Image (cartoon, rainbow, N blue to C red):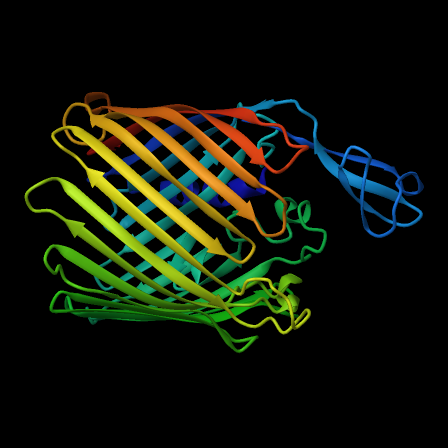
Length: 484
């Protein structure tokens, strides 16, 4: 049996055992989503020639046709090249989400799972046919809540999922306390750190699972103040080493139409603040809302990885934006920008010309007369390692009532430059996309089809080509209640 199914099977078994003979208020609701995709890729292949057959000294050399190769003395010169063929890939996934009520007051069960039946073998993780993303029992009362199973928790530390239990007490109304713990899962993978998904992709993966423990305290002062503080510790199951030990604080205040948001995350092992930010949003002034944010960020890596040993460099950033909406016409205009400066890495030559700062700007205009809408966006970013400029223009129309059904044309253009490569890349293209909601049948269908032209400049060995992409999705919503 697949080990990832066991928490869910235990969940269902417990739910069935706890059901009384005669109950009321039972029911289950959720949705099933089928997602099919198609895209074209142009794979690269690795090639090599004996080192003594390539003229010239040094690590980097050139073949007679101009191809740059990497050579090792007495070994081979190797490079990657485009073999000129396109490869079609068709991923296909099926998602099920549900929440059910047993008829026992406060007792419910929840789950989210994914299968990849019929997906293309070239798509990542296709060999894992079943993935339990979450599945837990919940017992909820006005003063407390208890959960058990596979769950995830979101806080100032990010998203962490684990197999275990959590308990929340909120008896005072304005104050709540939480404690949680269990076997941790690799972030974004829904599998143990020593499972196949991690060990097959990382030669230096850990050989032990992790145990995660944490606690949080939060408060709410009416509609004016709120905040929380979280402490979390993750250790190996043999208790010989730490995986993570961090804390986070989140605060929010609303004063006379002004909003103040602050957050910080602290790493105990390296005695440093990984992420700290303060954001201020003004009330509407002449129809314009302003927002200003200051942020300091230093990358965080789990202690079992080797990446922390390289002392990753952080940055400080300031960001300003303004949003204007009209009271008379359906028009929204947004513009903003940010400036970022990286800290000194204390490595390399002192006369280096590598950038240590960067900036980015963005803008948007959204106009929706009657049932039509026009959405134009532009973004520009220039910083360490490269630059990117581009935008999208969407012309669409809503169909029927509401905004769930629509059809639209999308145009896109992007220019990318890399500081560590020669030449630029341009991507231009368009797509038709839309969705249709059949409310009576609880069905929603969405689809898109687009083609994008990829062109390289100042790269004599590159070949221009056109890439096709398509998606097709079907979502069915269900809701049953009142009877078993």
